[in-house]
Length: 204
Image (cartoon, rainbow, N blue to C red; front, side, top):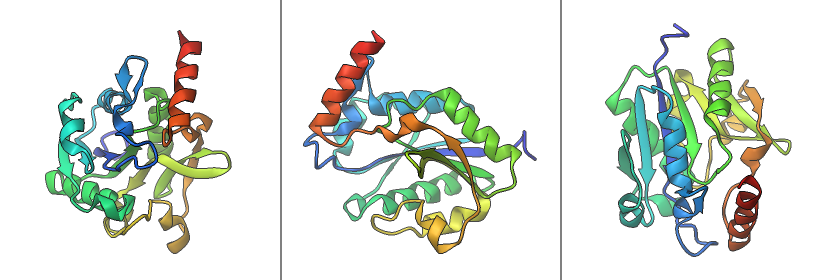
């Protein structure tokens, strides 16, 4: 089952970027937007289902993004928080392919997520016996993360600002982790954007 497992990916990009003042999904790094980067990382794999969840500023984001093979899902309840986007994305993925074995969750504002790191995350999950594998950074667990079929119903029921980490507390979940310190950097404020620009200069 392991090598032939069906994996879906859900990219969460529905937030309003209220602290930044404009869509962080469209912030550019290395000549492409953060969302485009996430899409291209996911597209380097042959996942069975590709879901992109949009909400706030959906029209602008869609116009400025090459969505490729991603099915766009609109979360009309994006203001209620990330949990609604996770639930919407998982539900739509299962409508399109009800025999998924795993679902990978990515964000749209983590510029240092790489295909190599996603490959490591996926392989740890496929080769292990736990229902989930999380990234670990700064002593915390978070996304990118991959979940087995046994957790799909719980993910669909997340509400409000509840992220997938809620399962760690409510289900006493056993899980694997993959160290990924760079995942700790996301873009929420103007200061983050400026720091990202400085980081980009170092890469050039």
